[in-house]
Image 1 (tube, rainbow, N blue to C red):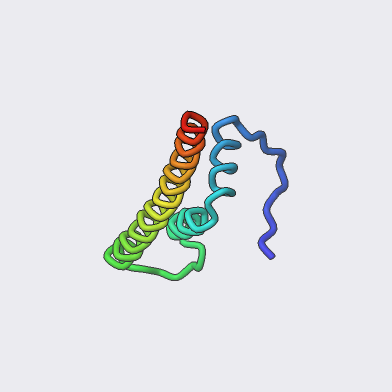
Image 2: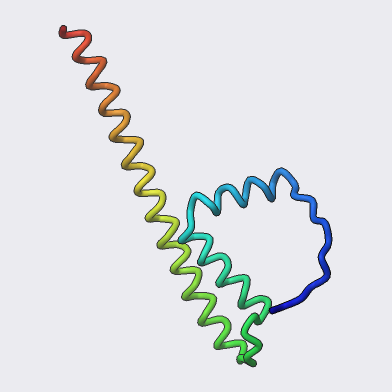
Length: 95
């Protein structure tokens, strides 16, 4: 277990917002953590700069795919909600 000195951390409103967004998007959170682990060299393995660059490019692609997937799901939900709302308004007018 990695033992670090325990210190009280204050969380800024921006940090709290980031945590809330990442909680809503676990796939994106996974990608961000993977990218950050490369910056920290979490596994302790020496790597060449070219290798790290290739890994980062792949992770950024995965993050982009996750982002687009989330965006598409959200857009689809919004469009469906709008269609339902408009359908209810039309039925009220015609009824």
